[in-house]
Length: 129
Image 1 (tube, one colour):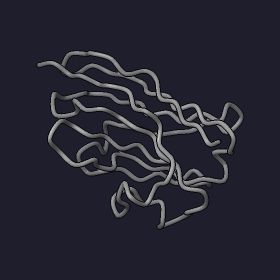
Image 2: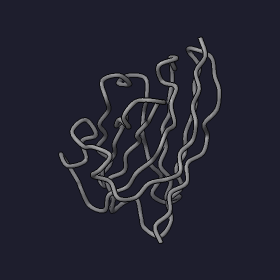
Image 3: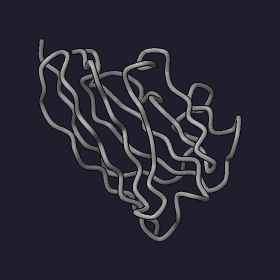
Image 4: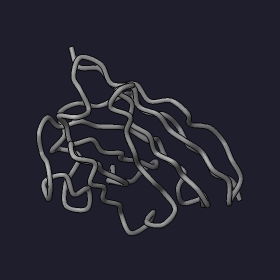
Protein backbone atom coordinates (compact mmCIF):
# COMPACT_ATOMS: atom_id res chain seq x y z
CA UNK A 1 0.00 0.00 0.00
CA UNK A 2 1.45 3.32 -1.14
CA UNK A 3 1.77 5.73 1.75
CA UNK A 4 2.54 9.45 1.97
CA UNK A 5 2.89 11.28 5.27
CA UNK A 6 3.39 15.03 5.53
CA UNK A 7 4.97 16.86 8.45
CA UNK A 8 6.42 20.26 9.30
CA UNK A 9 3.32 22.42 9.28
CA UNK A 10 2.65 24.98 11.97
CA UNK A 11 1.86 28.60 12.76
CA UNK A 12 4.19 31.43 11.75
CA UNK A 13 4.00 35.17 11.31
CA UNK A 14 4.07 36.96 7.98
CA UNK A 15 7.53 36.76 6.49
CA UNK A 16 8.41 33.57 8.31
CA UNK A 17 9.52 30.23 6.92
CA UNK A 18 8.49 26.61 7.20
CA UNK A 19 9.83 23.41 5.69
CA UNK A 20 7.34 20.67 4.92
CA UNK A 21 8.36 17.05 4.48
CA UNK A 22 6.55 14.17 2.82
CA UNK A 23 7.82 10.68 3.56
CA UNK A 24 6.93 8.14 0.91
CA UNK A 25 6.79 4.38 1.30
CA UNK A 26 6.23 1.39 -0.96
CA UNK A 27 7.36 3.25 -4.06
CA UNK A 28 10.39 5.33 -4.98
CA UNK A 29 10.34 9.06 -5.65
CA UNK A 30 12.74 8.52 -8.53
CA UNK A 31 9.91 6.92 -10.50
CA UNK A 32 7.13 9.39 -9.73
CA UNK A 33 5.78 12.83 -10.43
CA UNK A 34 5.38 14.40 -7.00
CA UNK A 35 3.38 17.51 -6.21
CA UNK A 36 2.36 19.77 -3.38
CA UNK A 37 -1.23 20.99 -3.28
CA UNK A 38 -2.97 23.22 -0.78
CA UNK A 39 -6.55 23.85 0.15
CA UNK A 40 -7.92 26.74 2.16
CA UNK A 41 -11.43 26.59 3.68
CA UNK A 42 -14.10 27.13 1.05
CA UNK A 43 -11.63 27.02 -1.83
CA UNK A 44 -10.60 24.39 -4.35
CA UNK A 45 -7.42 22.41 -3.90
CA UNK A 46 -4.68 24.09 -5.93
CA UNK A 47 -1.30 22.94 -7.14
CA UNK A 48 1.64 24.72 -5.54
CA UNK A 49 4.79 22.93 -6.71
CA UNK A 50 5.73 19.84 -8.66
CA UNK A 51 8.88 17.83 -9.25
CA UNK A 52 9.19 15.06 -11.79
CA UNK A 53 11.24 11.86 -11.70
CA UNK A 54 14.25 13.71 -13.14
CA UNK A 55 14.09 16.61 -10.68
CA UNK A 56 12.49 19.19 -12.97
CA UNK A 57 10.37 21.58 -10.90
CA UNK A 58 7.35 23.75 -11.60
CA UNK A 59 5.58 26.30 -9.41
CA UNK A 60 2.33 28.18 -9.25
CA UNK A 61 2.80 31.88 -9.95
CA UNK A 62 1.56 32.72 -6.46
CA UNK A 63 4.55 30.98 -4.83
CA UNK A 64 7.27 31.36 -7.46
CA UNK A 65 10.43 32.81 -5.92
CA UNK A 66 9.26 32.03 -2.38
CA UNK A 67 8.73 28.24 -2.34
CA UNK A 68 11.20 25.54 -3.38
CA UNK A 69 10.46 21.86 -3.73
CA UNK A 70 13.15 19.20 -3.67
CA UNK A 71 13.51 15.53 -2.97
CA UNK A 72 16.00 13.16 -1.40
CA UNK A 73 15.75 9.92 -3.33
CA UNK A 74 17.94 8.09 -0.81
CA UNK A 75 15.60 9.09 2.04
CA UNK A 76 12.54 8.80 -0.24
CA UNK A 77 11.37 12.15 1.09
CA UNK A 78 9.89 15.17 -0.66
CA UNK A 79 10.37 18.68 0.71
CA UNK A 80 8.74 22.08 0.36
CA UNK A 81 10.75 25.03 1.66
CA UNK A 82 8.42 27.97 2.14
CA UNK A 83 9.92 31.43 2.68
CA UNK A 84 8.41 34.91 2.93
CA UNK A 85 5.11 33.41 3.98
CA UNK A 86 1.93 35.45 3.63
CA UNK A 87 -1.48 35.12 5.28
CA UNK A 88 -2.88 33.95 1.94
CA UNK A 89 -0.59 30.91 2.16
CA UNK A 90 -2.68 29.64 5.06
CA UNK A 91 -4.08 26.25 4.07
CA UNK A 92 -3.86 22.52 4.52
CA UNK A 93 -0.90 21.32 2.48
CA UNK A 94 -0.87 17.89 0.84
CA UNK A 95 1.70 15.92 -1.08
CA UNK A 96 0.54 13.78 -3.97
CA UNK A 97 2.08 11.19 -6.26
CA UNK A 98 1.60 9.88 -9.78
CA UNK A 99 3.75 7.01 -11.02
CA UNK A 100 5.52 8.12 -14.16
CA UNK A 101 4.52 11.51 -15.52
CA UNK A 102 7.88 12.98 -16.43
CA UNK A 103 8.48 16.24 -18.22
CA UNK A 104 5.52 18.41 -19.16
CA UNK A 105 3.00 16.00 -17.63
CA UNK A 106 4.35 16.91 -14.20
CA UNK A 107 3.80 20.64 -14.66
CA UNK A 108 1.75 21.52 -11.57
CA UNK A 109 0.33 24.59 -13.31
CA UNK A 110 -1.52 22.36 -15.80
CA UNK A 111 -2.45 19.39 -13.60
CA UNK A 112 -5.48 19.09 -11.37
CA UNK A 113 -5.77 17.25 -8.09
CA UNK A 114 -7.87 14.61 -9.87
CA UNK A 115 -4.80 13.57 -11.86
CA UNK A 116 -3.02 12.28 -8.74
CA UNK A 117 -4.18 8.97 -7.26
CA UNK A 118 -2.07 8.98 -4.11
CA UNK A 119 -2.32 11.51 -1.28
CA UNK A 120 -1.09 12.15 2.20
CA UNK A 121 -3.43 13.26 5.02
CA UNK A 122 -2.09 16.82 4.95
CA UNK A 123 -0.39 19.23 7.31
CA UNK A 124 -1.80 22.61 8.37
CA UNK A 125 0.07 25.85 7.69
CA UNK A 126 -1.22 29.02 9.32
CA UNK A 127 0.34 32.42 8.64
CA UNK A 128 -0.73 35.32 10.82
CA UNK A 129 -0.38 38.99 9.96
